[in-house]
Length: 113
Image (cartoon, rainbow, N blue to C red; front, side, top):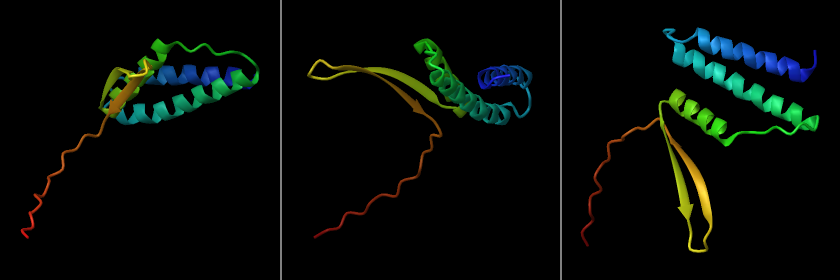
Protein backbone atom coordinates (compact mmCIF):
# COMPACT_ATOMS: atom_id res chain seq x y z
CA UNK A 1 0.00 0.00 0.00
CA UNK A 2 1.54 3.34 -1.02
CA UNK A 3 1.60 6.53 1.07
CA UNK A 4 -1.20 8.23 -0.86
CA UNK A 5 -3.54 5.27 -0.31
CA UNK A 6 -2.68 5.16 3.40
CA UNK A 7 -3.43 8.87 3.75
CA UNK A 8 -6.76 8.54 1.93
CA UNK A 9 -7.74 5.61 4.17
CA UNK A 10 -6.75 7.56 7.27
CA UNK A 11 -8.93 10.49 6.15
CA UNK A 12 -11.84 8.11 5.60
CA UNK A 13 -11.40 6.75 9.13
CA UNK A 14 -11.41 10.27 10.53
CA UNK A 15 -14.65 11.00 8.65
CA UNK A 16 -16.19 7.92 10.29
CA UNK A 17 -14.96 9.02 13.71
CA UNK A 18 -16.47 12.47 13.15
CA UNK A 19 -19.82 10.78 12.51
CA UNK A 20 -19.48 8.55 15.57
CA UNK A 21 -18.77 11.35 18.06
CA UNK A 22 -21.86 13.40 17.14
CA UNK A 23 -23.85 14.05 20.34
CA UNK A 24 -21.02 12.72 22.50
CA UNK A 25 -20.73 14.59 25.80
CA UNK A 26 -17.17 15.57 24.84
CA UNK A 27 -17.84 16.14 21.13
CA UNK A 28 -16.18 19.58 21.06
CA UNK A 29 -13.00 18.31 22.68
CA UNK A 30 -12.87 15.22 20.47
CA UNK A 31 -13.59 17.26 17.32
CA UNK A 32 -10.67 19.58 18.03
CA UNK A 33 -8.29 16.65 18.30
CA UNK A 34 -9.65 15.06 15.12
CA UNK A 35 -9.41 18.37 13.25
CA UNK A 36 -5.70 18.67 14.03
CA UNK A 37 -5.05 15.19 12.66
CA UNK A 38 -7.41 15.69 9.70
CA UNK A 39 -5.72 18.87 8.48
CA UNK A 40 -2.26 17.35 8.91
CA UNK A 41 -3.31 14.33 6.82
CA UNK A 42 -4.79 16.64 4.17
CA UNK A 43 -1.51 18.58 4.10
CA UNK A 44 0.52 15.39 3.73
CA UNK A 45 -1.79 14.06 1.01
CA UNK A 46 -1.42 17.32 -0.91
CA UNK A 47 2.38 17.13 -0.60
CA UNK A 48 2.35 13.50 -1.74
CA UNK A 49 0.17 14.30 -4.75
CA UNK A 50 2.29 17.34 -5.65
CA UNK A 51 5.46 15.24 -5.33
CA UNK A 52 4.01 12.77 -7.81
CA UNK A 53 3.03 15.58 -10.14
CA UNK A 54 -0.71 15.15 -9.60
CA UNK A 55 -2.35 18.54 -9.71
CA UNK A 56 -4.79 18.81 -6.82
CA UNK A 57 -7.84 20.81 -7.80
CA UNK A 58 -9.10 22.65 -4.78
CA UNK A 59 -12.59 24.02 -4.92
CA UNK A 60 -12.83 27.46 -3.25
CA UNK A 61 -16.26 26.55 -1.94
CA UNK A 62 -14.82 23.47 -0.21
CA UNK A 63 -12.08 25.56 1.38
CA UNK A 64 -14.57 28.15 2.64
CA UNK A 65 -16.72 25.33 3.98
CA UNK A 66 -13.71 23.99 5.90
CA UNK A 67 -13.05 27.47 7.30
CA UNK A 68 -16.66 27.69 8.45
CA UNK A 69 -16.28 24.34 10.18
CA UNK A 70 -13.08 25.46 11.89
CA UNK A 71 -14.78 28.70 12.94
CA UNK A 72 -17.67 26.75 14.46
CA UNK A 73 -15.26 24.48 16.33
CA UNK A 74 -13.57 27.58 17.74
CA UNK A 75 -16.96 28.98 18.75
CA UNK A 76 -16.30 32.06 16.66
CA UNK A 77 -17.69 33.95 13.71
CA UNK A 78 -16.45 34.34 10.16
CA UNK A 79 -16.89 37.33 7.88
CA UNK A 80 -16.14 37.43 4.16
CA UNK A 81 -15.16 40.83 2.75
CA UNK A 82 -14.31 42.32 -0.62
CA UNK A 83 -12.01 45.32 -0.54
CA UNK A 84 -11.28 47.93 -3.20
CA UNK A 85 -8.50 50.51 -3.31
CA UNK A 86 -8.03 53.71 -5.29
CA UNK A 87 -5.83 51.92 -7.87
CA UNK A 88 -8.69 49.62 -8.79
CA UNK A 89 -7.28 46.60 -6.98
CA UNK A 90 -9.90 44.24 -5.56
CA UNK A 91 -9.15 41.62 -2.93
CA UNK A 92 -11.20 39.16 -0.92
CA UNK A 93 -10.59 38.68 2.78
CA UNK A 94 -11.84 36.23 5.34
CA UNK A 95 -11.82 37.33 8.98
CA UNK A 96 -12.33 34.77 11.75
CA UNK A 97 -12.97 36.09 15.24
CA UNK A 98 -12.99 33.81 18.27
CA UNK A 99 -12.26 33.74 22.01
CA UNK A 100 -13.82 37.16 22.52
CA UNK A 101 -13.23 38.64 25.96
CA UNK A 102 -14.21 41.96 27.41
CA UNK A 103 -11.68 43.30 29.83
CA UNK A 104 -12.57 45.86 32.41
CA UNK A 105 -10.83 49.09 31.63
CA UNK A 106 -9.40 51.32 34.33
CA UNK A 107 -10.06 55.00 33.63
CA UNK A 108 -6.96 57.06 33.03
CA UNK A 109 -6.65 60.01 35.38
CA UNK A 110 -5.84 63.27 33.71
CA UNK A 111 -2.79 65.06 35.02
CA UNK A 112 -3.38 68.76 35.57
CA UNK A 113 -0.51 71.07 34.79
